[in-house]
Structure formats: structure tokens, C-alpha cells
Length: 303
Ligand SMILES: Nc1nc2c(ncn2[C@@H]2O[C@H](COP(=O)(O)OP(=O)(O)O)[C@@H](O)[C@H]2O)c(=O)[nH]1
Ligand SMILES: [Mg+2]
Image (tube, rainbow, N blue to C red; front, side, top):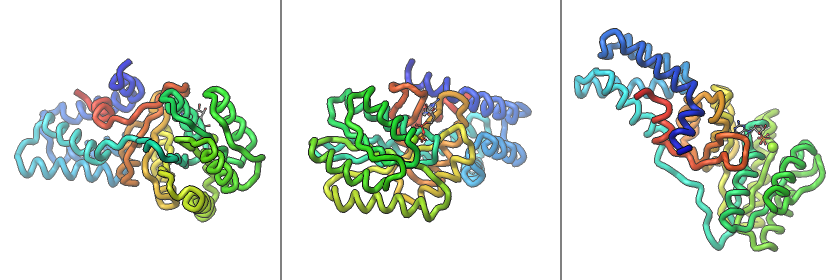
């Protein structure tokens, strides 16, 4: 299945909802007036694009109608398409710098898919012939360490771990030195996503960042925020908290396969100003793709 079809399948629910809504709103006369634009804004909010983001999209549509006088459904759809792409921003791939240690720090709330994404990325880089080390810095539960170990076994990758309850920063310290000793290309750090309170989270993440800066000053470090696209506006709230607690370089939007709320990805990009780099489209190892904004928007909108 091609990329567009995979997105189409995953986003079917959102697309059906948005397409049906758009058609219903436009049906009366095919031209948009103020009331219809209000309805469209409400539709975008219901599609989980977020209130501020939805308002910005309809503001652009109003502006365009004022400028051009074109209030046709086709024009409105065109502006919506362009605006969504603008919010998602220019494509930013997760690149690996050759000859350097590339550290990927996975952050995000429990259950969003950090460990799974770490495993999928591990497989991707192993297939490319790169040397990878996995770091089990989610020390909160023994099961979390075992889960990462299973990905290590599956992909033939060393996993650096301590016992349950140990200091995540100490695991990161050991992982950096293990990666250096092995002349690794990529070190993927899996973290716990406890959101008991923001200060706690900030402290833990900044401690890890300090260790990285001190022990691997030459490394290229990328912080990836993993969000679950099925959780709706909750994902947006989480993204905001994590964006404040950590310097997020890119977003991984997982679970765009089943009951995804497609608008969430747009809302998160709008809130964090961080590029969506990767999408999870399932639980197995091949279900990780580079995000493609054009294909995503095409899958979301009617036509
Ligand atoms: N359908 C689907 N499930 C996913 C995806 N990514 C992760 N999961 C599942 O979500 C659950 C939580 O994932 P996990 O990696 O343990 O999350 P973590 O707590 O952030 O490390 C697991 O059952 C995963 O198999 C995805 O892209 N699609
Ligand atoms: Mg985990």
C-alpha cells in the first residue's frame, strides 16, 4: 500500500467526518457566507484541530474571500488545504549525521508509543547497516525495561539497562559510554513519561540533557515528542506541557492507523511549532513512516 493509501485508511474516520460536514455546510448554495464559516470552524474544532487553530484557519478563509470575492466551496477548500500545510510546516526529516553519535531522546506520556517507536527506529537504522544502542531510561517499571529488551533481542541491538527504580540519568550516562565504546551511530534513549507534576518532569528531563551535554558534547541530540493521535485534545495538552519542559525538536504522531483523530496532529503542530517528523501506523516494526504533510492533508480533506 502506498503512503497516501495508508494515511487514507488510518484517517478514514476523520476524513468521513470532515468530508460529510464540509459537503453538508456547502450543500445549501455552494458559496460560503459568515454562518457557514462559523459552521466550518465548529466542524474543525470537532475534528480535534483545536479552537485557536480552527479559528486561524477560518480567519484565512475569510481574508481570502475578502481579497478575491471568491466564496465558492472549491476556493474555501483550497485555502483550508494550503493553511493546513502551512501549519504543519515545511518537511523536516529525521536525519542521521554520519560520523557522529546521533542521540534520539524519546519523550512523551505513558502509553503514547515511545518504546514501540524506539524499537521501530532501531530496526530502521539496523537495516541501513548503522550501529545502534538502546538505552532503557524508563526505569519506573521493570516491564518497561523488559519491553525495550525484547526490541533489542528482535533487532540484535545491545540494550543498556539498570534495575527498576534506578536513576534514569545514570542509565543515560552508561549508555553514552557504551555507545562510544562501540563506535555507535545512533543511541536511542527511551524515557518514562510520568506526568505527576510538571516540575518533576522538567527536572528529570533536564538532568538527562545535562548528562548528554557533559558526556557527549559532540553528539547530535534530537528530542522526539511522541503523541498518541487517538487521545484527541488530551494529546494537545500533553504536547504543550512537554514543549515547555523539554526542547522538542520533532513530533512523532503515533496510532494514525485505527481510530485516529486526524486533526490532533495539526493542533499539536500549531501548539508546539515543532515539525511532525514520523508517523506510527500500526504496532509492527514496519509501521513507521516519515511524515508527509501533503499526503496527510489530502487524506483528511474531501475531494
Ligand atoms: N495501533 C498502533 N498502536 C501503537 C502504535 N505505537 C504504539 N502502539 C501501541 O501502544 C501501546 C503503548 O506503546 P508503548 O510503546 O509501550 O508506549 P510508551 O509507554 O510510550 O513506551 C502498545 O500496545 C503499542 O503496541 C501505532 O502507531 N499504532
Ligand atoms: Mg515505554
